[in-house]
Image (tube, rainbow over all chains, first blue to last red; front, side, top):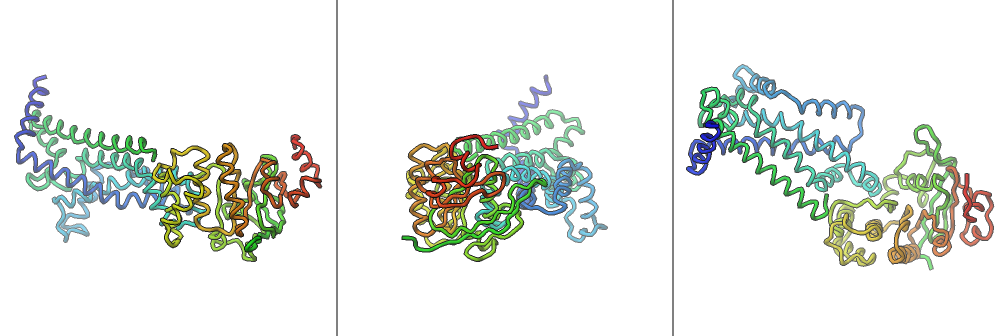
Length: 235
Length: 237
């Protein structure tokens, strides 16, 4: 119980003292998570919409493949990105290894299948509803795709939440490609892993509590948005 | 009285689904203005026929609209009001605007508002479409269908389960637009409605057109035993 009590006290102390290191870690965590989430949404939503409304021979195979990519092991992704970005790798000349950009790339690779696959499922349901109407009005697929994404916006927030959950809790890939370098690539999860390995359980717990609070706040925000959509009659 | 004539020519139309023949050798030439009703027992193929005309089904045979073969171009001159209204998860006004804007109709916002006024939904413009009542939803679907000023309008039991007010609003609009030249094909089970509004009637049974006649002639004397049984309210097997 001492560890928990100590951790709570320490976390509150860290939060309310606006600890510079903690704010730096929080800022980088937020930056990496949100940017990778943004990139994943930009790629994943149109991909999901395209797969939901298109009919072509290998469509089901691609959807199945995308679904299986949702369970990609982060360390494997981290390793692959590492190999590509390392000096001897094809993109080594870019000098991205051990930078936040490398972490964003790795996280995006992990989140794109989640956004793509889950949005595809939601938009497939909408397609069953809208298909005849859009065909009857001869609406072009690209226009239909954007309409689907707009009309499913409240449901798609849950997809964003799933992607954010993956991004904010991810440690395996970012520690490989980021290296957990202090003041450069240290994020919440890698800091927790480091503090735990050092035996600094109180600090690790404090960071964990903050991570949980961030995660819960985002969850509540999404639940509130969905509730808003239902209350307005758009869901 | 009628401004123009829109003609539908159906030649040897067959429709098969899961190796079952749903529509068999349909041959009709609909030249009349006004409202053509399609009637028949459940499973006769009425919905499948209008879906085929609207390009929603893969058919065999030929369908011509004003001598032009069924294509994306001819579908652009058509509208379909489905039995269960398909509404976008948006406001009432946005449901119309989406299509008027997409079709690049001049003053699309003004036109959309006018259409909502026509179907007496102007008070609900900003309301989410999904919160409308059944009758209001169907009126919205009709307003949207009219937004593109179609030459051909297909309606699949649009007034089934609607109250008298909504039915009356829809019927008045259909009479008006058919007088203005839009060819209306209307699926209905309501014999009185057919008598009230119909110019001619297509009676279908088991995927075939059993009769195609003027409404008055049809109700005077039915040529087929199925049509006779249907009019008399008997069960048709």
